[in-house]
Length: 448
Image (cartoon, rainbow, N blue to C red; front, side, top):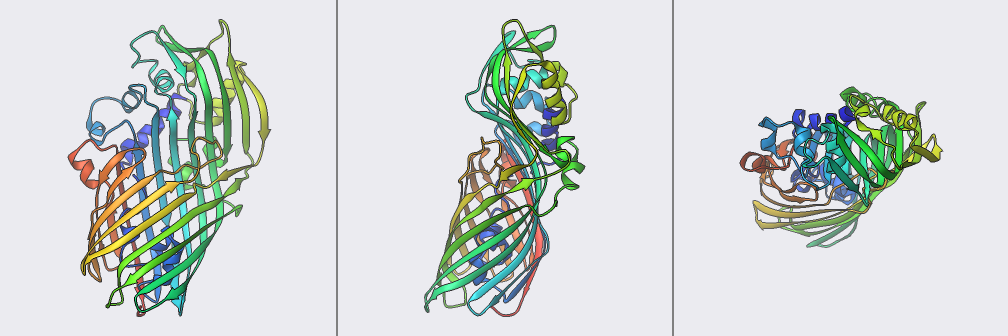
């Protein structure tokens, strides 16, 4: 279990990336498939008659404990992440947009897109139990720690693929105004999943002779896994080799846009609202398992937490706990359904002068990250000033995120190529708790 937890923080040192994907470029004046990812109604506003997405990749990580400057320090990540009493939250997310095609025909816009996702998250992990497992209580000032977690603590990872079929239509238009509606129907291909949840975790950790022992404990435990993540949580191949499984889930996005036009086939003001990722997918595999347990340790009994040292899979964690005799199964199933992270997106982009725009973007999650069958999301607010020409843009997203707080970045677009980061500036000038990077290439053809 120690290896299982520490491997998460090794990802932080290897891949320093975070926040919402494609920060800044997603509200670009050059409207294309990326904009439609946030709101399918934008397809009726495509800047070109047709667009081809060649590739786009965004890698994100954010946390509430470790700053960028800590990466170059002498202290171990597990020592830093488990300091203090604030629960640990970490989000590691990768989104890869594969080949896609979009086109406009009269008042309609259509698209077919492909994506792959990989996620590894810590949700509200008690710093004291983490310190006990990873460090044998190194950060504790006394020889015992009382646990009183009145929430669900989760270690969760998932991979899945997606094919999107989108359509949008102009609903109303005058010389000055335009109103669109649109929807995306998503075919989901679940790859691999693993979840360890410990709800209402109470107990005492005693530190004796360099070891940590859990006593007088009770919790509701969920252990669920499917595919390769059940047998290895830290192996990168477990994520990359299991992205696309069989078709076994559906989801939908829908939204609308309102535009005030200018005199040059552009806009003075563009706004939109959408709800994304309504749906879920069912995981099925030969090693599928989802079991709910009650954990109960009473009297003089204790669980030696050093047993989890070197453990790298949920299957091993589950077996150690079962062998301890402290777990009682309450329900079990082979196949299980996982919900996508439904979010509300709202944005507005205002032309200040013909080459200067300012946009505001909001992402508000509509689901509860504490639930064991839920893929996580973040709340984000981003303000982006942008210098924009037809074939060139430079923009500087300023974001406030739920996990890592304030960050500032920069991005560029030259024709169809774009590159950027939502946290480059804050990572360089202060102790930012997130960093991110994205790039991609698409091209359009045909007059708008």
